[in-house]
Image (cartoon, rainbow, N blue to C red):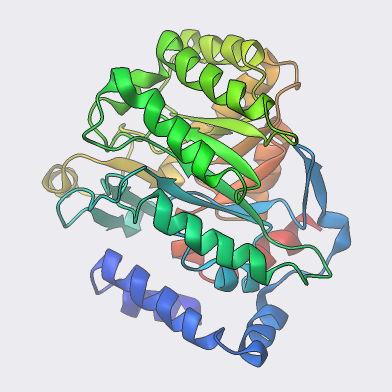
Amino acid sequence: MYSLVRDILFKFNPEAVHHFSMNQLKLLCSSKIGKQIISANFTPKNAALQKEVFGLTFKNPIGLGAGFDKNALYLNELEALGFGFVEIGTVTPKAQAGNDKPRLFRLPKDKALINRMGFNNDGVEVVKRRLDKWFDGQRSAVDGRLIVGGNIGKNKVTANEDAWKDYELCFTELFDYADYFVVNVSSPNTPGLRELQEKASLQKILSRLQNINEGKAKPKPLLLKIAPDLTNQQLDDIVTLAFEVNLAGLVATNTTISRENLVTNTQEIKAIGAGGLSGKPLTKRSTEVVNYLHQQTAGKVPIIASGGIFTGTHVKEKLNAGASLAQVWTGFVYEGAGIVKKICKELK
């Protein structure tokens, strides 16, 4: 059924369809009975899937990666679809429009997407108010609430040498509202951002965040999201740094700038231009990175696997490679609202 709906939706602009679809779901979930019906159909009911990671209890190991709900607009609806956790953002200090449109492209033959969104978001103050309202409404939850991660970044106009200020501000402002934090220095769509993956730059950002974190009564898990395009030497630097600054975990991986082995016509790919590639072409590489990080850390640093996850088999591959949790994004677009329940059924 969804494949038919998807074929129709794929005839329209990807970004417009995203907002249309989520707003329709929001309408359906706007009443208590509406959300109950959606939850009954899409939320997996298996206590055995519950996982304890970073000191947090996840109802199931399937989350939604950052970039889908950038502004914490759809937490109620995504909870109804059964996600064990949702990562909002990437959030920056100031609101920014992102890159020029069009900036999101489908590659159906490859089950992939290319995006160059550019950290478009409403800014930390607006997102903070939405999270405050969300958590206030969750105080009466009796069966465990949705875990919310905060993915934070820097504004495009902020120079790299001052990037730490942006991360520090977002971390401080969202501290009371996010269950865990992810430092995003691996998006290919903000000029110069990936340069911050070099050890010296990362050391400054992460050390400052941990200094703030450790001064709190209850520190929050702090994670780092990395690109799939790093060399083993660069990954080794990440591992060393993870231990030096006591990171709670790693997210592997973000989108890739590679265009190798695509089925889509080369001319079409060239016409699309720059952006991060996600989806099926990333499945193997992201698993390789998860496995390498797991081995190099001796399993002491939990990993959230992200990249090319469409089925329970893909999740099993990530878990066998050493991941503790998994995130979908492009798979959600191609497989539809039932992806969490489908994957959890396969895991069972």
